[in-house]
Length: 421
Ligand SMILES: Cc1cc2nc3c(=O)[nH]c(=O)nc-3n(C[C@H](O)[C@H](O)[C@H](O)COP(=O)(O)OP(=O)(O)OC[C@H]3O[C@@H](n4cnc5c(N)ncnc54)[C@H](O)[C@@H]3O)c2cc1C
Image (cartoon, rainbow, N blue to C red):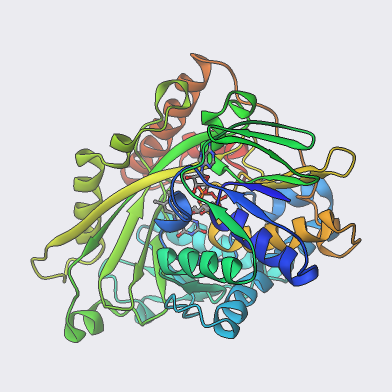
């Protein structure tokens, strides 16, 4: 068994295969070090979020399939917690839920509609919080989703890498895969023969010719503050284990870290021509400044504070924003990805599902609607460049439009089907 990429998708798949068949020989082929990609540098939201909404899943796959997907996502948040506890992975896992502030009348109406819709589907236990329960000064209220845990992403992925190695898998770091075909993976250090091959490259799939247009690498950037005092945290009103965001279209996300910093990130970095991924794209002063000022706007009670860390990385966006798990038993080749920004927990579900598919088991997981889903490919350049950057601009414009008009954005409504809503 060869697994290409030692991020959370590759590692969870290895871990789950080891659970089902401890005698299996598993080699993970990783260009850098295990956890180098998005898995080691994300926002640490172990959430039940899936890039496509329940309504769009139901429209495409039927109501029962959509609800099964939602239940699987909610269960996955706890499953990650169970594994890290049972195996002693010290990654600050704490399930405190997510608070999504509604910071305008438009966002408040959207929050009410979201909670009402979730109640109708009957799986996600969202709560509507009034202003008395939220401490963000200008918030009219919030949506609270109990299905989210805060983790330290690098500790999770490195802990998992150690675990799968202890159980017999080999992780070949510094090994660049250049192509794969039935039974054979080609790398810069030679070839690997394997009956089963799992491709777990997420955004980096765009760097390899044969999967260039399967996924679009979109950058998300983050900052972390110095540790804040207990008084400041009491004023902000976020407990340990809680993550936070607000109702804007251009996504932001934050968490209170175990050592009392705010780790805070957002989209908005531009897409690079030809799906290029380069170390210098992990950093953008424009985006870092924007994140720091957004944080201050969210929590004006913050004292002057130092931003101590800045980083970023590429996540993977499929053309229809529909994550998928695929396996072809005739070739032995499988893959999982396209999680957009919701991969931390979803990779665990992918790993369990791939392990069932590879071992030929017919389970509830292998019948979920994302299994064998095939997203269309992205357009060739220059269309990909124009479309991706126009989409980012549209989300920024939609937020501005709502601020000015006080009504829900027409731009956002026009873009919704393209963004999985
Ligand atoms: C800044 C940021 C914040 C995020 N925040 C969150 C969050 O809070 N919650 C959430 O759910 N999701 C979040 N995400 C998304 C989440 O991190 C990803 O969806 C998830 O980690 C994907 O895991 P993966 O293993 O599929 O991919 P990756 O972790 O990207 O792993 C792919 C691996 O393949 C390796 N590789 C690349 N090219 C080759 C090659 N040619 N040969 C061999 N190996 C190769 C890479 O080095 C990498 O280790 C965030 C992403 C980013 C970038």
